[in-house]
Length: 266
Image (cartoon, rainbow, N blue to C red; front, side, top):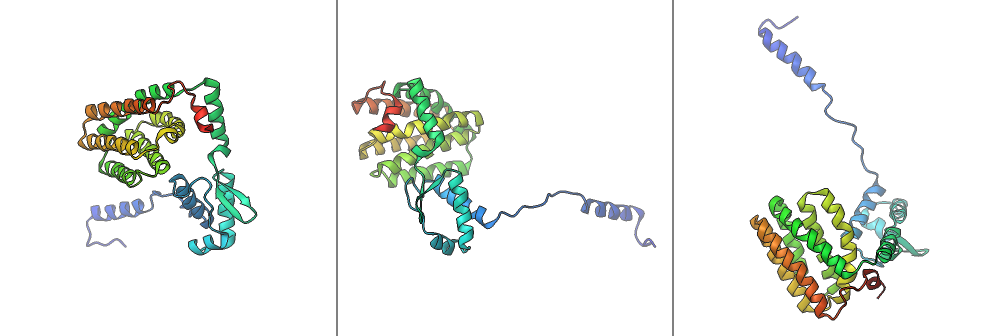
């Protein structure tokens, strides 16, 4: 029997509410397996550089204890990472982070560099095209979290001014972060291979506190202009930074037409 104390429109609204409650607004939720979660955690540590090339992973027993899982879960996680080419077995009991030279994609990149005779001069021109524009877009589109992320990278670089390989890795992270802030997926995809070319060049001549300190000051200025939302100045400062990269190369007595692939072998 309908409740005669309620007006018809209230009953109608009640029926609509019941229908709305049955509307499908979700899909079945997939809970990640424990080994997938552990593999994802280790993968993130490797890609972030916390675990570096050649670093030995803890034993299966130690990993199981740290993660609160069984050894079989650890073994499955390690198998997943090994198949992804992120780790390799150095001995029956020892797993290490795989060296990039063993990465098929990296080897193919090196082969492409040799076939195309890519030189430092080519790399500088490519940076001069991409980096100022990425800085401009970042200044137009960065939010507070983006800026805070950039400042954190710069702070970490300041802590590693005398640790040149780590500083260079952070330099790579800094410029990729700016590319991501640009929000242009085509530019991000185009910038990523350039990052792989940069590291051998940085390792070749970034070998003094003076170099790292000078470049970090540029990073300070770039982030300051991005934070201020000044695309014109951010673009101009980044252009000077890229040209200063070339000047430092020449001052180190290095040939502008030296092939990048040769740097990786030195």
